Length: 303
Image (cartoon, rainbow, N blue to C red; front, top):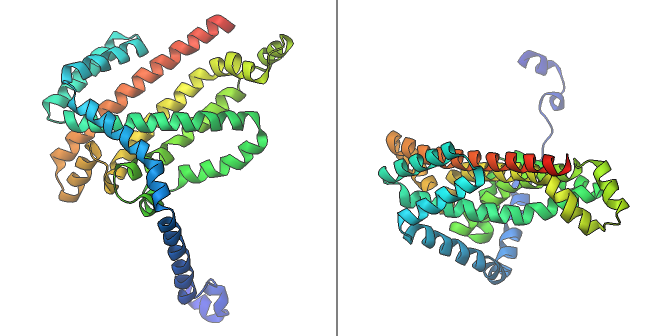
């Protein structure tokens, strides 16, 4: 190939590109402009994220400071009433006790607080956007490319603009996790509503239902199993992103894994990874079982 390029014009062998000086100049203009914009609105940004910071700190203190038997009993109750499966409940008890015996209880509670807040935000943001997409093809055409970028962009890249805007701390990490985890919530909400049988909607129209009544009483109940699958995926992706978010100040199990990577501590990394896997399996089995129950309930009512 080198010999062939000697016989051809230079522009055919070297792709034409902007000069390094012009690229550096453009980068400097964009970066300086972005930083100036952030500095101009720093007080507004701080005021906007303060409630989020307060809620995260409160939930973290609640999980960490509460007696462990209360947290464990509450968690087992949620798992049982969500799954109605005694094996999943026993597995949860064994996993959480193993986490406690390994000295990872407090870090696990910090991670649980983070994932809980991220999931709540993703649900609050994702469901309305998914509903709008389901009701409008134009909105879907506009939002889908944004979701494609959010899902394909490397997770580390999220941290760059988030840190530039919000600095280092828990809230920037939380926002990065939400950006990474919210697309499945939006997509599956949209999908679930669009998959509702048209005959059911026609029957609702025949009874004189308004758009809000159809959404509330027909579409959302029938789409609920699919929406639950979206919540499940959001939780899984939140747990996956926790380790990356630890680079900007998020504590908990992710921070321990990052330290283990930096210091090549195999045992520390493995044990904290085990705790993350245990939490992920607990959430996954519980939400899947709850989704199946909702599906059966919908089949009985509308079947």
